[in-house]
Amino acid sequence: MSILRRLNLPLHLRHRNHYHRRVTAAAIRHESAVWTTAPLSIVEPAAESLFHITVDLSDSPDLAASYTRAGQYLQLRVPGVTWPTFLAIASPPKLASAHGAFEFLVKSVAGSTAEALCRLRRGDTVDLSGVMGNGFDIGRIDPPEKFDTVLIFATGSGISPIRSLIESGFAADKRSDVRLYYGARNLRRMAYLDRFKDWESSGVKIVPVFSQPDDSWIGECGYVQAAFTRAKQISNPWSTVAVLCGQRQMTEEVTSILVADGVSGEKILKNF
Image (cartoon, rainbow, N blue to C red; front, top):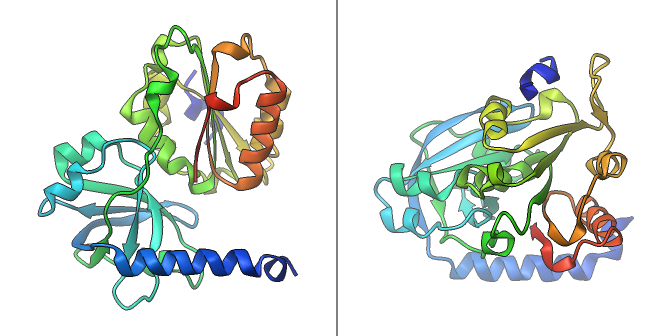
């Protein structure tokens, strides 16, 4: 049954030095980055507080071609805003090479560069840095018959690089158990609902988990780590791999659960 049918439609002081190091490092990257100016072709709501943003790279083929692996990211700079924002590329590399575009899922946070980005319109320009990061090393979960269980965990806008991973393809249909635990506050905060059917057709079972669901919701509630703990069902930890992207607390807790169940830390791929 399609998932769409099932859905029924003072810490800052303690970490001051760490924050200073992060800001300093970001300033260095900001000053040393090589920027490419490109226009926006799409700015539209994706869910509550989330936006689809597409950047047209038809005049920047080298930048488009430099995106080679799901999970990579870049810096994006909005004119008139001091600091760039880091964004994972949501679209798969094949879209960049075929159509010359990067797609992003952006959470609009008050007072942030991301909020300024989400207020722009089609035709407005932004600056993009080069593509960064190693992305998800899919070679570590091949061949599919050796790693037949793939557990994917994402929360909020962390679904962005997971979309790229799923749509890039990792032979999900050749594995016996591929699950995506996708956490959001409620259905209104969940992006990519229109893609769930295709993702399931590719072999990915989607498990939505809502922390503040509406009264009509009868599915998983709470946090993804709790939902996974209730389900477990890892038949063989030696053939199990996991992909994590989202809040740090989630990734740390899920990692602890998986390792306790016998999954090797080397088989847990993390993003951000």
